[in-house]
Length: 85
Image 1 (tube, rainbow, N blue to C red):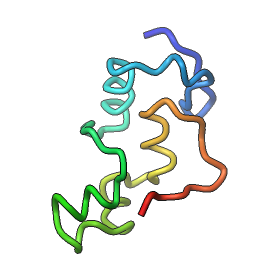
Image 2: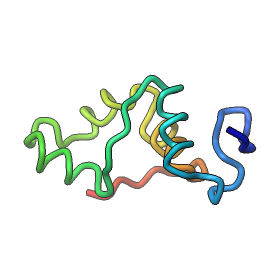
Image 3: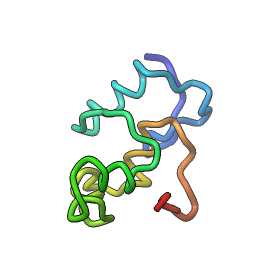
Image 4: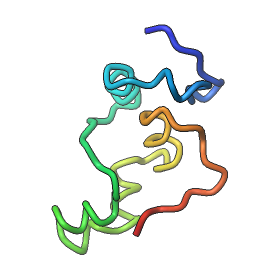
């Protein structure tokens, strides 16, 4: 898959991101890829309050939500991660 990325694997051009590339990156991160938009609300709704937390989110993305999830989503690395709570 041809795409340009920085030394951490973050896409240089977010427009390069597509579903196939996202699946490929997630596989490289040893993560499954499911649909999610408002992550903490969705975790709470689907798994309950104990798992609708940042602590649980970091269990899903052990190298950091901003690092791994944004990488898979094709987003630029955030300066400061703001979770939609």
